View 1 (tube, chains in turn green, brown):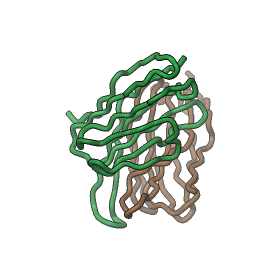
View 2 (spheres, one colour):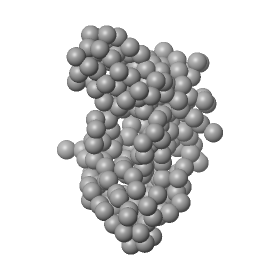
View 3 (cartoon, helix red, strand yellow):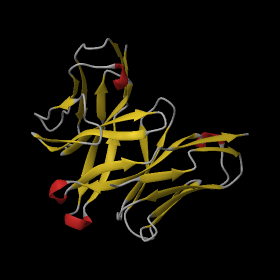
View 4 (cartoon, helix red, strand yellow):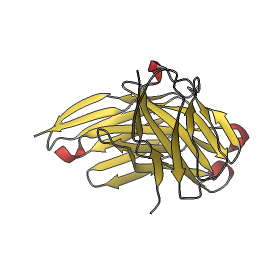
Length: 118
Length: 115
């Protein structure tokens, strides 16, 4: 079954304690990304990765790091979490087909990680 | 800067009624996505609209895309309680190198269907 798996699903942590949220996909997609969802703001992209060892900032990257050492995994790292990073986080894996202007995409989302930083 | 605006943000409907959710976006794009999210759940893909004039239907939901007007609509016909959820539209923003994959989301429309 095609899946995007995030862990943990729920996490409560304290300010400044480093944490990692893992994301794994079994669809052999090159493109993966992280979003955070906050009430009234919708989903905003944190980081994305177009392939192994290729990552770039999204719209709200401050306070986050990512790595992409293998195609299937794209962990999100919070080196020193702060309360304003309390949010619902989604990892997405995107299939792409076609070429150039006719390239089409469809994103598949993980189940989400609800993070609370106190 | 690509912006995606949904209207309305909140919608309370009676069962059996029809309504339309609007999604406007600020820059050229010929593909648009609709997602559904139930409370506490992930996003479920509803429709992928890939060209101007595209129309897709699934049950009581029908989505359309007008790339010239930069507008997509999600029409709900004879609403039922099971359709209560938050609906998001999203547009692809091209990234460096011409490859695509960045989705820019609207803020979502929270739909509540009451008996």
